[in-house]
Image (cartoon, rainbow, N blue to C red; front, top):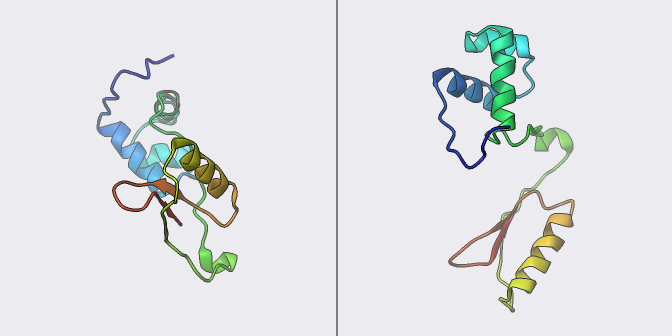
Length: 116
């Protein structure tokens, strides 16, 4: 297991693989290897290392709001009346449990939270 406290030092191939995965994380290993100009075995080993080291946290699907029927995206600033850590945590937990909230960010200075 890699030491997660050690800084990750990507080389050009790692950076190429990361760029390709950011554009389309659904690429098969064979397609990714071809686009990154590596062998399939090398590509698979590097992606595994990137995941194991925590550089790649997860792979997600980006949905089309229009195709899903979403007609509006709201970006909302929230300032709480009470600023205690327990109040901030309680609000954050409630916000992320709501299906309509796609993102919840604590911000400073200004409002306490930004919700998308």
